[in-house]
Image 1 (cartoon, rainbow, N blue to C red):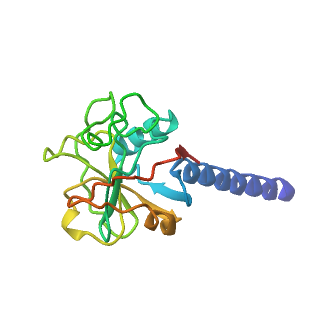
Image 2 (cartoon, rainbow, N blue to C red):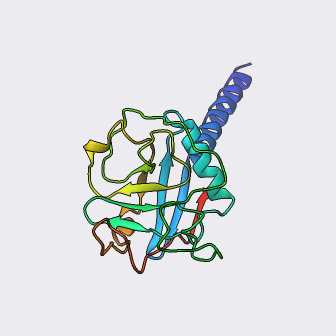
Length: 188
């Protein structure tokens, strides 16, 4: 009887560990850049539809070869235009990168109380709060003026130094003439 109780306790602990580890891994994505891998923790508890969209597009390869079309030093790096920003697509047009999205419908906002700190990953959108589609940005520094105005759906937990190395824009609005691109973006 005593052996059986110990065995059951060990079995329960093993299953708790296994389920916790699986849950944690499904909320981690790897953004492969030219200088190294960036590990991003996703927040499905506060932005479930945005996380689902990003994971769907990433895991289907839609973000592979998409350029960072707008990068403002000391502010953020923006990417994710899967229509005009994919450098290996026939529709690639650097002048139009930043105005496209995916073939999926726009998302309703999921504004939350998570701050736009260094490493925050947030959804880009037009002036319409319900216009997020596929584009997102990563903050280089805190940007509290964006809080509760854009949907935060993740945060860089490893590799922020590689985000810092993304080629910065040379235009007034951060437009990049020779942009870096996402090599791949996948769930862990």
